[in-house]
Length: 59
Image (cartoon, rainbow, N blue to C red; front, top):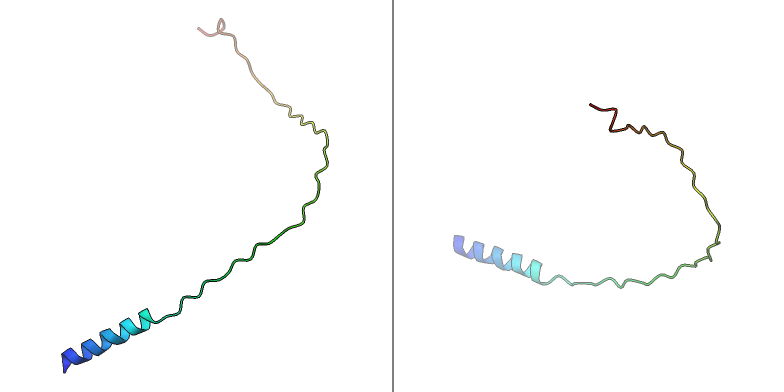
């Protein structure tokens, strides 16, 4: 009796796993409107402080 219930349970598990329908989702290709870039001259200024030490001063 125990073997029959295990066999029936195993068959039910295989049935539920094996009989699922596999639906593949179709991916739609999207198109986006693109604007034309405007060419502009850009300048970046970054000020910084630097310390320069001479090798002669270090002994």
